[in-house]
Length: 388
Image (cartoon, rainbow, N blue to C red):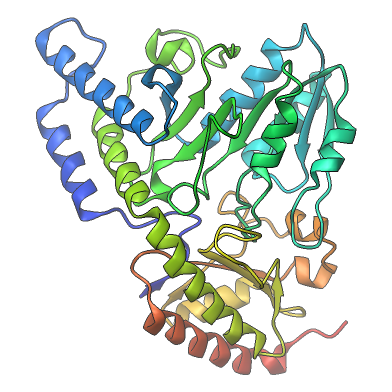
């Protein structure tokens, strides 16, 4: 089997699996308990927190909390910041291409009475900093922009946005960094980021662990009540084995990030050349990328207008290729991709998108195999195309 769905989840490192099993067997006490076993578990938890902080220069361990997922991290950040800042203003800004865990949360806040501006993107899926600047008002309390789009891989100008928002001290800046962790450089303090979300299972770690960076001085309204864990922002007993294993996964991803990005950009260019040679397929997003610019190295998205995406996915699966259509959180929806429509794609393209996302186990041989299988599937499906 060839697994090309790394944006949805990644295969855990063997070292991560061993770490999680060892901690689960030896340290099963509640980390909030006062006895020795509880204190030992609590110490492991804090060591993991410190290890995460060390990966981001300028951040302190006290500025990081563990959650159950990036979806939870995004909800805590967006809802918590909006509600805590409501006395200062009720205007929020995000983009039309955010992950559902952010986009749907802003829609929920609209129903609470907040005013939300959804910034458009260009045909490559990138937001304009000037559009953001024009949208800012005296009532704006929060801006949330993802670093890397989870469907097409577009890289947003986070550093430029952070520079702009430094002139607007009352505005909090949240970044969904799920798809950039371990693939692209991230400078939380240099870019002026107030809150940053990440997920362990996107970097070869276990599912069930999310990260949320909250800059010291930022106040959030908790979504849950009933415990003092995680600075009272995420009450509930922490999953110590998974958290310790996740810290190891994040460290491994950070240590090899630069080399990974360089290698993956070469693989992406190889796959682009293949897809461009198949007339029925159309690539969504930028194809002319240099290191760290315009699109992430591990994602390529294309459409097959006139063909249902689930048909393509199941045909690829018969060839032992595992790929996806859009965000795993939205993959069962038959609606056209909100992201592709925002990029001015046609309806036919927006309902026929396929996402390829790869990882450390892939090289030129695997990408060439994928190319041959995609070409074969298109040949088989060509007679079934829907015209118009």
